[in-house]
Amino acid sequence: MTLLASSGSLPAMASTGEALSPPAMEMRPLDTYSPAKLATVAVPPKGRRRASDAPPEGVGRWSAQEKPTTDDDWLPVNARRNAKWWYAAFHNVTAMVGAGVLTLPYAMSELGWGVGVTVLILSWIITVYTLWQMVEMHECVPGKRFDRYHELGQHAFGEKLGLWIVVPQQLVVEVGLNIVYMITGGQSLHKFHDVVCHGRCKDIKLRYFIMIFASVHFVLSQLPDFHSISSVSLAAAVMSVSYSAIAWIASAAHGVSADTDAVADYRLRATTTPGKVFGFLGALGDVAFTYAGHNVVLEIQATIPSAPGKPSKKPMWKGVVVAYVIIAACYLPVALVGYWAFGNDVDENILITLNRPRWLIAAANMMVVVHVVGSYQVYAMPVFDMIETVLVRKYWFRPGLRLRLISRTVYVALTMFVAITFPFFSELLSFFGGFAYAPTSYFLPCIMWLIIYKPRRFSLSWFTNWICIVIGVLLMVLSPIGGLRQIILKIKTYKFYQDYPSLSQAPSSAKTSF
Image 1 (cartoon, rainbow, N blue to C red):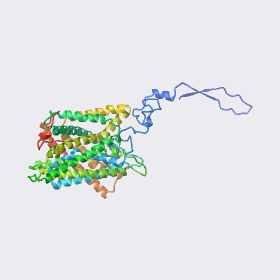
Image 2: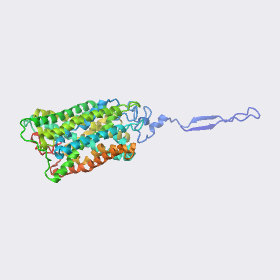
Image 3: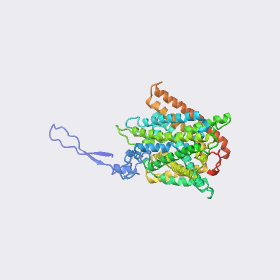
Image 4: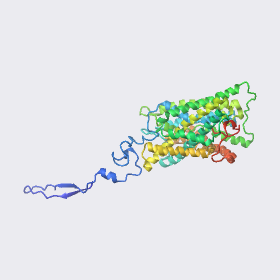
């Protein structure tokens, strides 16, 4: 506050030789403005959206009830840090074990026994290692937690470069999977309807089943944070294990049944050399990209409490180990038993090959629906976190129900629209997603590990990381080639808003994304 000193009268001399005392200063304000009043008319900084930047209570855009207690603890990822290790376990199972597990027998028919088993095991080992790296790097700086993939990328590559490297790839994976799950949920509902009705009901277009599936997410997407979707994620994890068990147990029963006349043919599906090469590349991508959970692992770890003596990495790693044991128990039996039972006659969806008993296949399809409901929410939560961060910090939205209602409803509607318009999107994602799946799961964690920890050159850690980087880069380059060939072969069949044949009518060679 600007003040002005006015001069008073000089004091009288007390006596001869007495020193002059300093003149008295009378302070008076020039105006009546106060700091609180100035705050009401001042324009706050554009980027103010942290608790430390909030104005005094009752002043400005935030009230006491809306103001976060600490920085960013209103965001979906780190709103509550009270999760246990078993939360991490089933969140990771939900994120990893997708309905794509049902396509693994078909991938084996393109690879053969030797190469197929090798790729399955090698992918499992590499992704366990890179997931361990991310769990360790979550708190690699004392007193700081990297709650999001892009925050770790910014620490490793720099503030701007880290964002440009991580965010586009993470969004391709998460938004792409949300669209695929929207299609998968609609197709599974469609197949459930066909199996139960068995030709007795009126045919319903796929787009309406996608709308039915999306209606569930318009409600569930309003759940505020990761902790609030725990029940949904747990149910999804249980369902993924259940339909995987149905797939391999029913395949085993078929393989040992007495009425099986033909012996399975284990030769490669393709007969020409180009067909074998492109089939190999496509199957390589199908197996490798069943591990996409790295894109949400830091966000899951952010829900676990951490203290100086009890870092979050210990319970998180315990949950990851349990999750990966479950993943192996799902992937390996489905891939190996399914291929053993049907050989190169297996369809791209093992449930279509089985097709009976009908009640069991109907139940498996409904289990897939429940699972992709949970998977959609797990992969959507980091996207919600990004969207709400931008809206609040840059565009002055207030955190709360209104923000969630607007932003998340629009996001679900957009993914539903794309799924209805492009029901072949999963086939396009096998090409475009190849440039994002391999980096985020196979070699980007290794690069960040080398930058942050700087292991000694030619040491075991150095060699291990570079081997993973080379394998990941090869996957990123080669696997989209197989996806591109599928697009070229089927481009004439792609139509906007097209419908897929019913389960009972699906030919053995038809492409069915489950």
